[in-house]
Amino acid sequence: MELILKEDVINLGYKDDIVKVKDGYGRNYLIPTGKAVIASESAKKVLAENLKQRAHKLAKIKADAEALAAKFEGVSLTIATKVSATGVVYGSVGAIQIAEELAKLGLEIDRKTITVAAVKEIGSYEATVRLHKEVAVKVPFTVVAEAE
Image: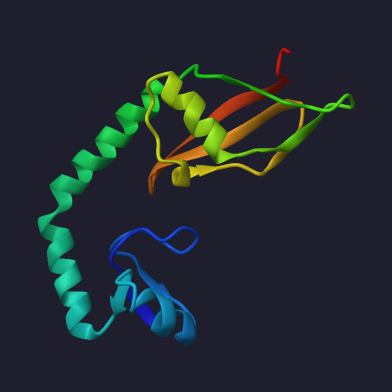
């Protein structure tokens, strides 16, 4: 089934992308929740016309994302958390903690745009922040033991 996405769907595509999905996923989730519409010939023509008219707006959005990416230059985070005597983190460090640390630096980022594997040990790691479908930034961070 071919669909046109009406909004960004993580691990599937971005707004206005034409994607192929299994019938059940499209009929039972994407279409009823308003995240996609069926990609008929007329819908594809309307999409092409809309993209042509919005080209300059999309260029501005990408430029804004690149300007925000420049602010990430040289940013390195240190996340203090509770750890056991062996250096294993209680729970895990994920996108929420990274978003909170970035907010402390004045970089308000939606946690859903941050991709990081669950960190369970002290050490240095790297997270990816997707600011735009063509602009992604790597943010290094270090997990340290919380001072008691």
